[in-house]
Image 1 (cartoon, helix red, strand yellow):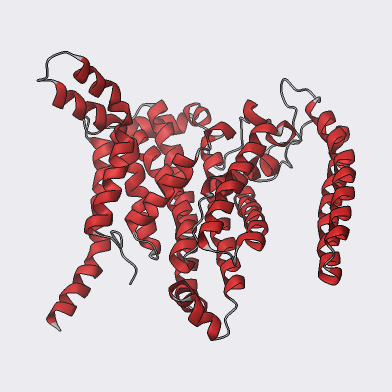
Image 2 (cartoon, helix red, strand yellow):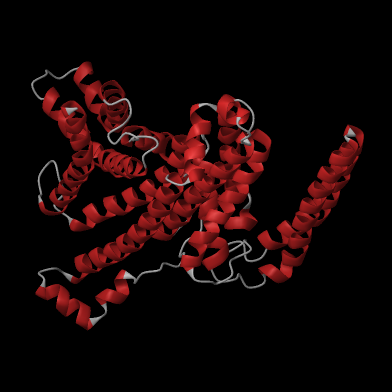
Length: 443
């Protein structure tokens, strides 16, 4: 009995202690200036903000894996889907783009959706493969007849500056929710095809779809200018230049001992941090309520034993689809928020190492099935991911200082920039060895 009480007490104190240690690291990053820390609050807050966005992404993956055991290897694709939302929602309309090909583009999309709906209806009633093939082939030609001229007209509209369809000019905060809807729609399409199959098939499907989404973003200039990128995406907070030109703000910054340029950067990052914390806490609240509800208990029962759950009359495939859509929507929200933070969309930056593998490391290290564990793992791993890029070369330089000059020393020094990959693998191995259920395991 005493061992049980000690274990419960240790578990109760573990989360506050670990979060307190993490907070101390950020304070040191902002105040101490040496080889370990930068001594800049701008740097500390920049790491924290990206850590919070990574935490939201990890929360979505944790819903899929921790709640239902769904192995989503296409996280990067759902982030990219969410990233489209600020471009299509918040940017002002491109002059002449809609007149050039907008109506025809909408007609093409309507034809595509209509053909798929007709094909599904015919298949449900006839089960005729020949009829489905004829419908899809005819629909494909009708779709391309409308789509191709529309795209060409839009991309030829002021291509040096725009060449895309533009946005609706709506508030950027609205685009965060729309980003979740975009990712949820993609998850529904993938889930209808892949869910119900073995978990390895789902992993293959999500991996392929994720890469397809990123490839489409790179090559479809009419959508978001492709590899030419989108800049000047509106932000929900003040601009540094405006703050620096504000005499009252400059005076307050001077009273606190900051230069106007430094103070404006800190204020903007604090504003972003406040917004990100609100979104993160709301999502955690909803996730915790769902997890502790009858629905959450049912999801965990399905995760632990699908056969038994099916025997009790549960529609496993339908429940998997629900949680897959919910988790992907959260990932899409994070994708829209990342683009808003950066102020630009660069499709070439979406690589699986950063936006899939690293997110999975965050979930595993934090503790799958525990929402607070996903948050802790995300912020911790992102802090290490950034700082190891500085610590790694310093460590290698210190270790190789006594060595004589030669090929081995040169090889070690040249390999120093790759220390972050070695560090992530080492952290993952240590956690799996000494805390296989994560830093904050599921209760």
